[in-house]
Length: 421
Ligand SMILES: Cc1ncc(COP(=O)(O)O)c(C=O)c1O
Image (tube, rainbow, N blue to C red; front, top):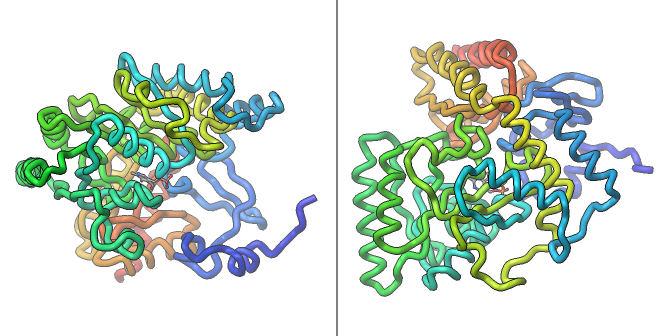
């Protein structure tokens, strides 16, 4: 039997301060139940979840398709076998992912977190090309394990751990509007040349087709199309990080589909299982078939419950036309919110693509303040992001109804207006 403990004080006592539990409040609500877009406290107070566990619980909570799939996997009695044995749940997911990706001739490598999948992409790229150096982009976020941290741009996140620059990464500017695309491309081309001259040819070009947690920047189709050409002309792999924006969040299956490219590697996480730890790299052609057995393993990769959740999620995205729902219903709600706040001088840009919206304030403190007010006064959970934490981020489940989202965005607009009155 699980002992009843004081969740808040026990967490505060024992939890590593490197996690974000107490970032916003000293006494965050403790949720004991979830249903659809709602989370409920012990006292049954409902909060609207516009965070989704950092853009992860894309179907909301307690989704019947997902819960039934996980229960079905549980009923097999096999919680884990590892990858030395075939799992029907892993096989089913491979089959479904290959249909979802819609790209001929692919192979797939599963792992547990987004960062781990980035590690897979880095290792595979080095192995395939025989080169070491990567180009990644300013403002890009790719995770916190050492490899993923090296390709993540923010100095706040990176410098305390790996010094001045990740020793194998060159950062290139990422456009903040279409007028910057050409300059950014020129800069990137110069980096390619420079690295080649220095005897360090580029192994991989790693890009978020939409920079998500940095504040919803993009998509810039021409930028991606030209990056594809640069990668081809220098013989390196083009890797797209779809961990945040993939799986329908952007209003497309993958956010790179705003351009015409086919990437060499697609990195997925978060919304793939939409709940349990799971990530994947999808590779074009035989790229993932070249390394030897055991070259890159991990104990829990392809866990049956996580695979079952992912299969159910992919099916639900297709069967309930959730990608159309994102572009036809959710994005217009955000655009209406942006329109309603357009005259507020305290608000900077509002950027929305699909089911993600970033509202920019003067600084991170104001953005945090409004997050706190939304939570305390309106029971709306929102997220923080932006290049320096200056954005309030809205990341709802991708199946949220128009009425519920619209009503709550109006409440949020009132909270923002009141904050500056
Ligand atoms: C674009 C992107 N890449 C990688 C990651 C890292 O994923 P994880 O936190 O699962 O390691 C994240 C997480 O926010 C992300 O948004």
